[in-house]
Image 1 (tube, rainbow, N blue to C red):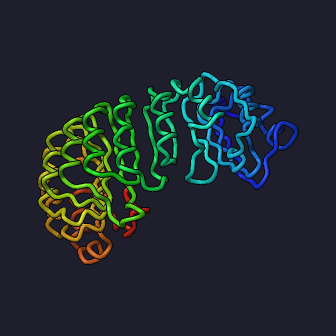
Image 2 (image 1 turned 135 degrees about the vertical axis):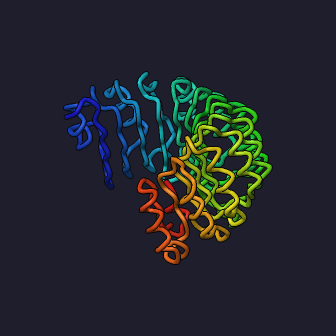
Image 3 (image 1 turned 120 degrees about the vertical axis):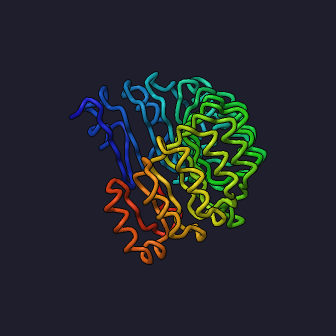
Length: 336
């Protein structure tokens, strides 16, 4: 058994402390650092036992409908080593942190958390998280239902240490707040379209506000946003450390965007996803053929990739480190 084991337990029933989970954990609870459990029979008492036994645990994820049962639930403090937490009642739906046991948990120990996966749209939950978990560096909401703008706009003001944010939807106003208060951001991902409207309400104004305030960004994803080359100019100027940019489905982006981005970011940009950007043409590939850069992965639409097969072979001969890949045509199979 390694000194830092990662254990994932999936099953219809997991019992504690007299069943299979206890037997599985018994030999290495002191060295266990990562534990992910999916079960229909795992409640707050079981969580207490894990906190007591796994003193070196740093990453815990639990999915169980029994976490809905809060009557008479008590909770012990998290082990001091625990910095990453996901507690869900079903995939994509987290516990309500403004309710008894969850609230006590983060009230007592929330400041030690650096990563929280809290798939909840309830304002009460977010009021609790913003009050108790002020040291968060990673906030992943990518599998959550659509947020109200008012709720998301309040999060950056309270969580100013964020370095990575993954959102299911956004607006210019939301990006404005992240740009204003979260200057430590390294990664910002907007990878899903709005489930209600079928489109993401982010335009140039929001992107420009975000990057002006967050010049440490290294990874950005803006799937299906109605942004133009104007945003690309701001990104090229304000994000000198940018390593990966996902523009999947940004239909207004054209070849000029590449001419804007690549020269200025030639020493940092490694990955660029232009899949489902219909205004990208052979001119972009010719640009990469003629200009040296550190880009190692370029994703373009499958139809364009097939059409320009001969040109891609020539580029490969001239630029052997550049991988020009045909996109999958789905935002779920985008750059990362």
